Image (cartoon, rainbow, N blue to C red; front, top):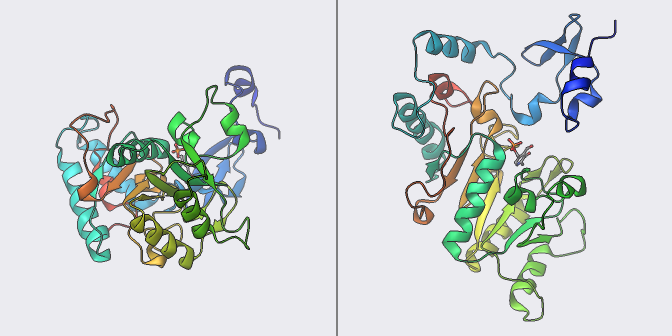
Length: 312
Ligand SMILES: Cc1ncc(COP(=O)(O)O)c(C=O)c1O
C-alpha cells in the first residue's frame, strides 16, 4: 500500500533530501531495524549517518533515559555546573581519555557536528593567529559557513551564497597515488611562490565518510602528525562520523597511535540519537576567554549519556 507522503510534499521545505530516496513513512525502530507505518521491516544500514551506532532504542540507554525523565532530572541549564555533566566529564576522563593516555579539555559546543567544527576552526585561528586552514579534497565537515568552507562537494558549497574563503584544499592521497602529499604540503609552506598562506590547522577525517568511504593509511596519518608538529600547525581530527567506535576503536585515529591537537565529536556521542557534541582541546591551546564561543544548547544534562557511547 502506498503511504501518504502528501503532508511532507505540501508543507516541508524543498531542502528535504534523504526522504526522497526512501518513499515510505517510518514509524518505529529497534536495534538495526526500521519499521514503516504498515509494519514492513527494513535493515537500517544508514544508522543515522553514524548517529545511532549503539542501535535504535537501545534498551540499556532507554531505561536510564526514562528513569532520568521520571526523576525530574534537569533537562536544560545552559553551561552551568550540573550533576549529570560532572558525571559525564568524570566518566569520559576515566574511561575514555586516561586509558588511552590522552589529555584533553572538553568543550561543549552546540549539539551538532558542524558546531563542534566551528568551535575547532575558530579556536585554531585564534591560537595560531593565522586565517588559512588546510582541508582535504573529498572532505565533509558540516553545513554552517565555517565548516562548509572546509567541505568540498559542489552542491553543498553552492548553497552558501557568499565566498567560502581561507581554506586550501589538499589532494587526498587516494586521488593521486603517485603524489607525495606530505611533500606537496611542505612545498606549499616553503616555496615563496606557492601563493599559499601557512595554515593554522589541518582538518582531516581519518576515514572520509560522506566523500565515499576512504580510509587514510596509518603511515599517512603518522606522517601528517609529524608534519603538523614540525611546522607548528594544529592537527584537527573530525571524528563526528567515524568516532564513537564506528571504526572499531573509540577514536578513529587510535590505529595510527597519534594524538591530534583538537578532536571533534557528535552523532553517536549522544548515545540514543540525541543531539550532543564535544570539541576536545589539548590543555595548552585552550585559550578561550569565558563565553567567547557561546550557545544555548551546550551539553545534554542527562544521566543516560554517561552510560552511552560504549563508555562504561
Ligand atoms: C565528518 C563529519 N563532520 C561533520 C558533520 C556535520 O555534522 P552535523 O550534520 O551534525 O552538523 C558530518 C555529518 O555528516 C560528518 O560526517
